[in-house]
Amino acid sequence: MTVVSKSSGPVPQPGILDIAMYVPGESHLPDGLTPIKLSSNENPLGPSPKAIAAFKKTAESMERYPDGGATELRQAIARVYGLDAGRLVCGAGSDELIGLLTHAYVGTGDETLFPEHGFLMYKIATLSNGGTPVTAPEKNLHTDVDALLARVTPRTKLVYLANPNNPTGTYIPFDEVRRLHAGLPKSTILVLDAAYCEYVRRNDYEAGIELVGTSDNVVMMRTFSKLHGLAALRLGWAYCPPGIADVLNRVRGPFNVSGPAIAAGIAAIEDRAHQEAAIAHNETWLPWVTAELEKIDLKVTPSVGNFILIHFPATGAKAAAAADKYLKSKAILLRAVGAYKLPHCLRMTIGTEAENRAVVAALQAFMTGRG
Ligand SMILES: *Cc1c(COP(=O)(O)O)cnc(C)c1O
Image 1 (cartoon, rainbow, N blue to C red):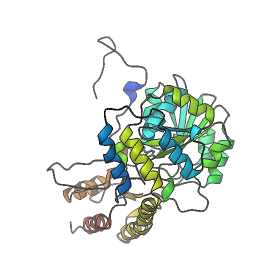
Image 2 (cartoon, rainbow, N blue to C red):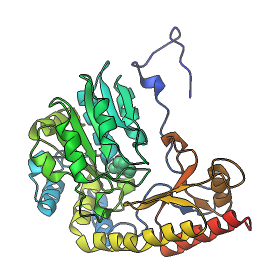
Image 3 (spheres, protein in one colour):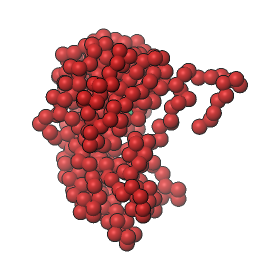
């Protein structure tokens, strides 16, 4: 990163030069081979064919600005989930919504709070706005509500909770989320980042729709990048109390969601069969990959998402860095998660059957030294 001397030229706002740039999951191999890319939790089945068709159709009218309110998309989401479209705000990925919410509520001297292995965007958004990111320790790679509550101060403006969390793949039951909310001051917003909620099959889990509907200080974020397979289009939505929706609508760009994203998003949210197929695929392969890796003495954190966190020995020939290098030599890209304070782990997205089998075979060879 470039170092800017304070005396020599333009200086950005406080906090901005403290940001460690977000490094996306790798997507290219040095020699230009097509990799098995399991580094960004994308949908191995791709998007709904109906979303692809809707996207293509928008090519015929690209000279037109999109509907700045993304009205039809919000209405489609509202219909599918039984929500009030007036409380929905769409964004260029939930990343943009995290940024906008933070921009609107966090300034110099304010704090945000999140679990220690929480999604990196929370820290970046906080520093971008001059705020101080505060992290709470986790318990066995699970969010610890007591540790979060112990760190709430009068300056805590936002508490971000990815449930399930990325990169751990763990979740906390909704009773615990309610307990967290009950312990927060009314002036603190609880941000429930439910990027992976559709994959969770647990009776004690909820994404947070009901809590948003009955509170003034809870926001739920959702994305089209994971289950819906539309990561390239950049599309997410937030379900908000009316006051917070109003604030987000004031600070967002007037055309922050593109026409192609709106069209594809409507088709995707209405294609229930495609969503079910992606969930069923994950239900089959998540346990299979987990079990196969455990057979070769790799510890896998039990995941409820579409990815797993794989633990390697801290040192020696079987360490995570060596595994990453070996997999790359086999054209397999997983995600190193040192930036998430998990240097001995790699995160793997559940891929197609062929991809999953290829990773398991490669890791078997790596672990037994036959690689
Ligand atoms: C992938 C992910 C998102 C979604 O990001 P988009 O900007 O919508 O692509 C949000 N939160 C978490 C925890 C994620 O893993």
